[in-house]
Length: 190
Image (cartoon, rainbow, N blue to C red; front, side):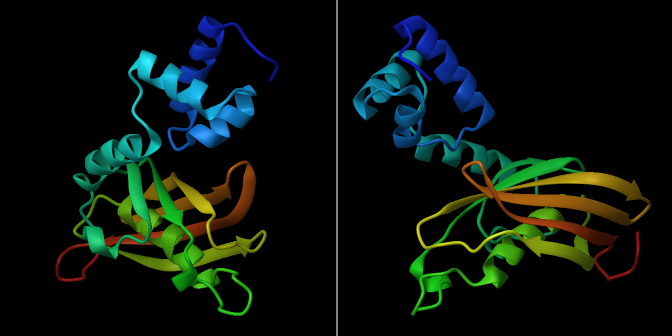
């Protein structure tokens, strides 16, 4: 993207943040080919909070809707949730998740983020994964911020088919299809 006039840049900045509220000032500066300070000033002028505050605002709204999991049971940070439809979560890969000799994040953390996101979509007291067909597209390194997006593809009575895709920036990291069952508090099908 070449240098744009201020008004046009700010308009596009608003669009970019609406599309992906998790973009950092650094990434935005790179995309718009301006300094980080210019992005910060544009955000202030437009009344757009920094990425941490945007993330926190989204998370508070999303957690209040979850029925099937407690907040500590969700792997990653739940950022957006439309029960029965779609959801988004963020997982910041850290050294505790990684193999000590390579710095590569263990796959079960990436799977757990996707699985808990899929389960959180089910509007039921209890939701359990019955099956998962998954694929890892590349390894994840410490420091990468993984955005998982889940979407209910099909719902039949108590059975949900949910697609989840995890990305780092524009690169696909993980994809999966989860079959999740809604149960009542006694573990019986609803």
